[in-house]
Amino acid sequence: MQDSDEEEFDRDFLARAAKGDAAAWRVVVEYWSPRIFRYLRSNTRNEELAEEITQSVFCTIARKLADYVEQGHFESWIFRIAINRLRDEMRRRKLHARPMDSDIMADIAPQKVAQETAAPEELQALREAMDQLPDLDRQIIDLRHQGGMTFQQIAVLLTEPMGTLLARHHRAIRKLRDLMRRHMGDSA
Image 1 (cartoon, rainbow, N blue to C red):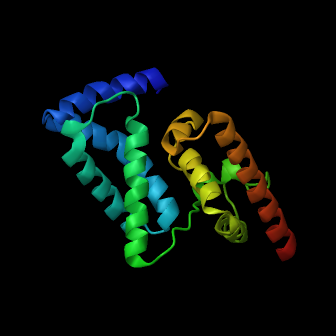
Image 2 (image 1 turned 90 degrees about the vertical axis):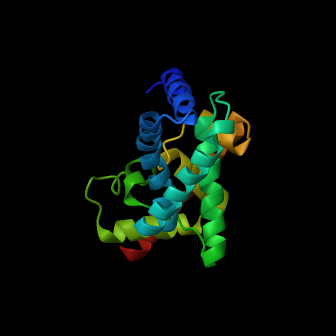
């Protein structure tokens, strides 16, 4: 879906859902929940916890939707709620979010690892490399590759200039590749 199509979709269905249209609310949830869930699952590495937090996100949205004014930033708003819920839950459980799921391997791993069927040691190397990245680097990678957000949407969400965000993403990917190469070289 193109950005303008997505904004129109959001405007229409969000307005109807805010007025109590159950069918429109169902469409909003069905459209957005998979992306929110993937982002949360990547950060928690726990499907049940990711599902629980996803439900919490949509409960919050249901409560606040009547007051929400769509200005083309629904995606940033919903991801900000998800990030805050994740942080709150991790604090409550005294856990640290550690992202990584094999779904993003094609985008961030070296060519050999990007194959459809990665070996368990390659997945482990990717997880360990992600664990070594600073939190902000992991967040950008997850929002882009798990949350499916565009760089423009991430820039709005994180209130960063586009050039800064692109540079940070590029450096994070480079760090991740270097860490992967080191780990794969150590185990070879």
